[in-house]
Length: 101
Image (cartoon, rainbow, N blue to C red; front, side, top):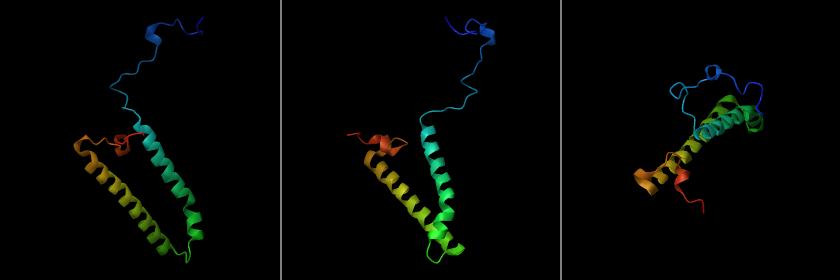
């Protein structure tokens, strides 16, 4: 009932050792979100530059630096407050510690 190659010899089956494969878990979704965000930020940068009042390269650079700094501070604050809330039991992804309700 199977396909054409169902009954092939086990020697011909592909073998993937657990030692050869990198560990891939649910963190791959977090990585993909970060990569997509980076892509969209770069994709929209010319649009942001055109819409910026008094658009010069030095001013655009300072606006980008301030915005990334504010974002980093927000992420840092969420991490610190999450650690202070749960202590040493904090999960690597702080939001996992909070109830879904």
